[in-house]
Length: 556
Image (cartoon, rainbow, N blue to C red; front, side, top):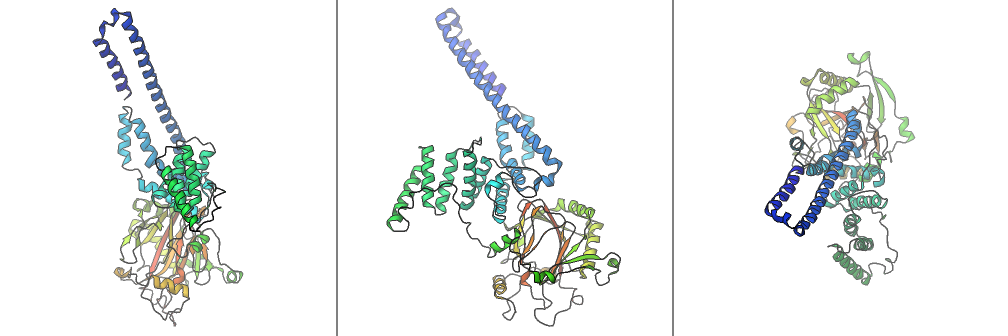
């Protein structure tokens, strides 16, 4: 484009001289050429200035990316363990590189463009960028983080610094806005406005931010603040196409509400500032507050009395020959339902082998629709998983055998070893591992669990096709430490179990009668910092009849 434009200018001048060649015969006419040349020189200087500005932008981009990639490639998993880094990587690949492509396309940089075009097919999509943004908002809610802390990268246990620019915050707000999430729109637009007010150099204008912010606070029911923000918007941009109409509508609505006595007529005398705080709207999850409090380490119902019932021991799997000389260290995590943790069940080398085997097979984790029984992806389960067979490696054979030895259950009817990796904000909201069956009104349990039972009583038998019965027990291996977040929590009885690399936790999902233990509804909390790897082994009922006989009562 640069050469094309230069050639075009020179060709234009050449053609002009060809058609006006008699100018040399008249000084008066030639004076016109002086001004023409000056105009061409000014045009040429503007062109050069534009090219230099463009190359300066590209150079700054290259220097910034070189520094980023130098840091990120030295410790990819650690770097992506910071959720802000993960979000900004997705955002850069989906948005910023396309902007760079637009700039570079102004030059005949065919080699770069061809390479970028080939690589673009592997780039994250807009959906990925939105998903990463929503993950940051999920962390914000679960761990009660304010936007300023996230923007400055002030998170516990981080290994790499990261920050969000005013433009990043603005884009976060827009993603929430497009999703009809006005609560998060307000939080992130406020943060963008705050950073602009603090003098951050950005291409985002205050009027753009106020446009989204004023309408969003109106949607949250704050009419007074909507009027105040709209007035600020008009003061900055009197010609704004929507602001005038919005202000007229807001003021007319306020006057109507004041006339009807719905609001105090003097309430607007002290205009609110943009630091207003709004309550997070309720959602579909009834135990949301309890679940998220446990994720933060709050509300754990571990009493002194219960603590005294918890013990540590060496466990040999009922004198299993493979464990006699090297018994497993077992610790009680909870008394009822009984949850135990086993230590040193996976070595570092085994974990790395399992991860390498799983990585090529990882795909978005699915859940079974409770109405149709069909597997589908869901916003409440954000992770990727893979299933490993014993044919994949001798390590899988050894690990399966070890789990069987420790639990005393047969793995012949168990599911394959499932490997799961949770990314930015990765989570699995409260769920049951077992399949719910038709409600039995004689089941002895408390009212809360009866309500939960009723809510899921029409779920199809998810494991019928396997022919191995329901999921009897869960064995959960932790294959990584998680610097912050990522706990396994049980909202029903208030337990939180934190990941420890090389350990595993075990519990029964069914009573000995075969009825589901609804207390075992559990969740994988969002990963705040780090990367969480787990390996699940689910044991089924068939084949365990003589290993774990039926109880004498219905709920034993």
